[in-house]
Image 1 (cartoon, rainbow, N blue to C red):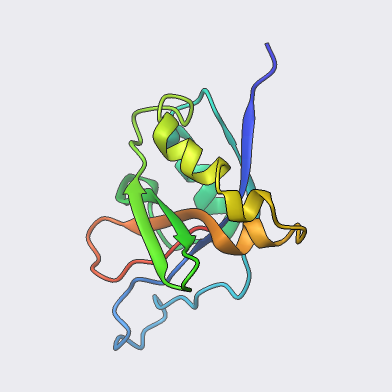
Image 2: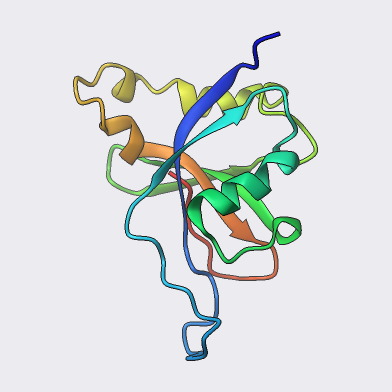
Length: 133
């Protein structure tokens, strides 16, 4: 059986304490990377690969994915968190948000989709969070 995949851009924000100046501080990556999620593998089983791909300081047990997209007015839309115990295929509403956006589908710019919607990585015990795109 061929494993179905969904590819999107991912990124994280260093959600650590901005006032700490120790070697445990990490800079936010300057650019996003592309990651292919397996549709029929639980999200929790893929978070470790996501973290390694973007070299995030998060631990897989403390991380979660959240939907993100830019609205027409330029505002950020922080969507729902993905359930790490479920596959992406089982979370159809969230998958459709990533796949179906008339503005992006009708765009002639192939990079527009990367900038407008994606996934975010969050650390559970932090307040400041940022996105996977």
